[in-house]
Length: 217
Image 1 (cartoon, one colour):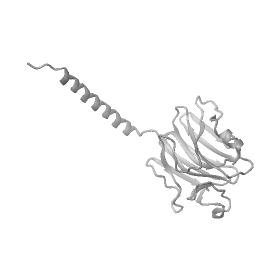
Image 2 (image 1 turned 120 degrees about the vertical axis):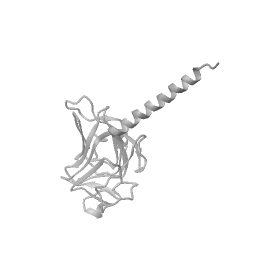
Image 3 (image 1 turned 180 degrees about the vertical axis):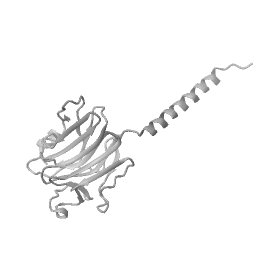
Image 4 (image 1 turned 60 degrees about the vertical axis):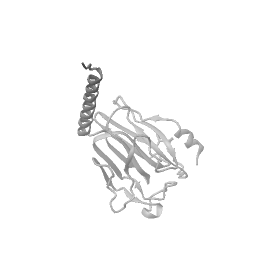
């Protein structure tokens, strides 16, 4: 494990914003634990089924693989690195390939368990009026030395913006990740139900106040 990488990982960094007012904030929530998710996030994809790698665990989200593969270790594909403390299947994005998560309702935050990132790895976040790329150079300075002795969960938030698409890519072999998680933006129908619920609760409280404040002869 590189002390340089650990020190850099402890600092939250932001992607360089273009014309967007918000940037992507990056921070590490845990080391060496693929299953520990950030507070408020739920598992989106675990990549444990190579027979159906494009399946995600949450309704309203899709995953499209263009050249990316699901497997374990270098021997499975010939170009995959390793993920420390992760014996299960994971996603490998080789050079020239992509893996794209899409949601109509959107992402408030997104996280991945990943091996030490290379400078040629990148993640692109696209939303309404929002388009930011975080490269491996922004993730702990990148790991051009190919030191794969550690893994970490990396969490991305968007300064209040709603992201609709997350694209993982790499210009060379490879980018290895597992256990994608998301803090979802509620569907419009969910918002309506919540508002109705708040309204009903308010009506009950108002009725209770009238009963408590009533006088009886």
